[in-house]
Amino acid sequence: MEIRGGVELPAIRENIELHTSDGLTLVGELALPATR
Image (spheres, helix red, strand yellow):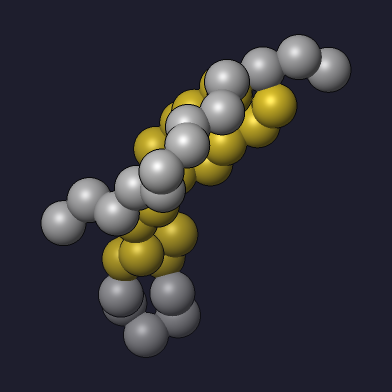
C-alpha cells in the first residue's frame, strides 16, 4: 500500500526499516530537504 500526499516537495528520499524489540519490522521512507 502506498500513501502519498497531493504535493511532493523536492527531497532526498531513502527507504528505511525499523526493527522492534518484539520482532516486528516497520517500513517507511526518510525524506530530507533537497537543499541544506
